[in-house]
Amino acid sequence: MTGQRVGYIRVSTADQNVGRQLEGVHCDKRFIDYASGKNIERPEFKNMMNYVREGDVIVVHSMDRLARSLKDLVGIVDDMIKKGIAIEFLKEKITFTAQSTAMDNLMLQLMGAFAEFERSLILERQREGIKLAAAKGKYKGRVKALKPAQVEALNLAWKNKEYTSKAALGKAFGITRQTVYKYLTKL
Image 1 (tube, helix red, strand yellow):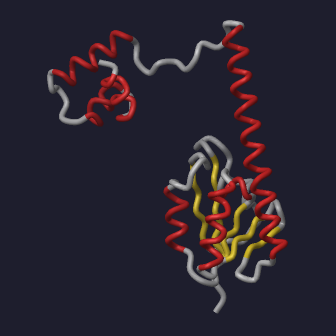
Image 2 (image 1 turned 60 degrees about the horizontal axis):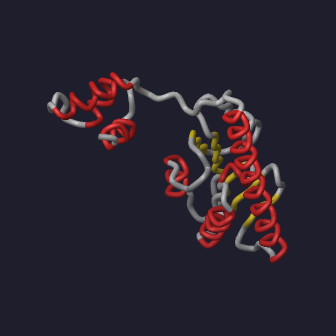
């Protein structure tokens, strides 16, 4: 019996289009993550890793959709190959299996290194652009979630135990629990 073709799709934000990644590609099951690829702590990635079995093929649009760092990419591919699971990268037109050659492994290292390098360059240009815009007074930084008066009200509400949890407090103020923690630590 042959395994399943399992598609993995990742975009950074929910408003990005997932359609183009595995368009027209047959997959028995697909896992879609709306998360950054900076690490492997992604819910659907974990679900996929628990789902796949020996003989399956994981189909991914490109290496950078699976992992952003060379370390993560190599680790994922090695783990899957050891479990008898193949990984197919469509854009790079390369598949890694237990029968992968030394040349295949070299290609993985090189292409992964280039993807990581490209990401680093993008982030560097972004930082340079922000710095330049800030120097010209066109970039003021991220807009704060709450105005100073709202922060005071949030702190007072928490101090007076008006809410039983920080999640409930955040919901009342229209912010996440993590943002509540940030504002409460500024006391």
